[in-house]
Length: 93
Image (cartoon, rainbow, N blue to C red; front, side, top):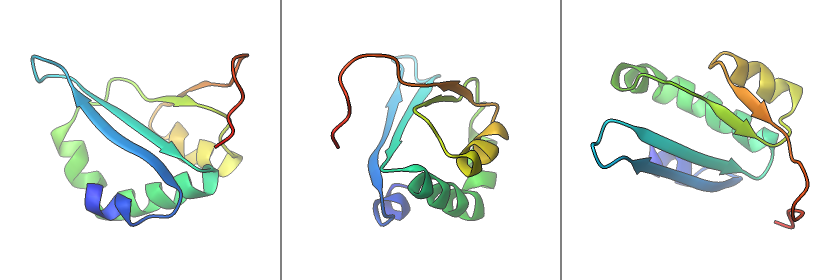
């Protein structure tokens, strides 16, 4: 998955973190924009989704930012919870 994602346009971060007991994995992904995230999810779904779903029991799917309607439609299938920006430093990336 890492090799495939590293070749995609607009991927800013693609990281996995595992707890000490190796029972919980946290996924951190960040994309340049909603179009890049949609493209990633389409590739992921076609290539990895079935195998990945057999390996994990998703507990939470949290989205930070302001996804497009198209991206939101896709993320809603995963039971995403949304958090929009609130104060703080602006993003200049």
